Length: 232
Image (cartoon, rainbow, N blue to C red; front, side, top):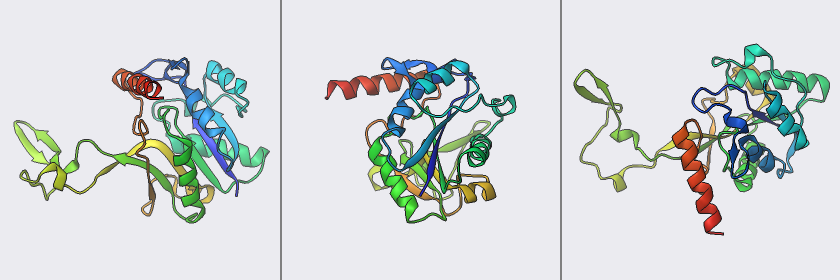
């Protein structure tokens, strides 16, 4: 089985300028994903899709594939990860060889671990007609979430019960952004990683739920890294 890992890292980031090349623990953020991916034996290649020459140089120094700078139309705020992955797959299959699956690794999830990736790939091997998506337990339970209209609060869920104790609520999960794996045929056909029959990959190790999108998230990541170093 051939699985191509695609790491998407555009230059633009409104909330954290230069996020993907900013140093976390002394190394560029993108290198966290590259370094982990390089430990995965099941991958046939690691391809970085970026429009940033600096990110390209960082990635090339790690001996991963950076065949081009991403075209401008795929480096905008409206360009989707699916579009970026399909662009990369088209090039790869034309210039290298056909692949069975594509693994999307976003640099904003630096603390995904090798065990989780391996577990997700093994799940995929037995369910190649379904996508596998990383999830983590949510902190704010949806049964206690509201929307506000004017001066009124409305529960998001119809079965809202204010008297339910937190320990009695069923487990709830969010997509954590750390792992997306799907067959290339399915991605080309459905153009989404979120198929109706997608399989959850629970990623509940320390830090795996961190998805860096804001400066606060960055501070959380630095705190997490300090904690991990302190307990070693």
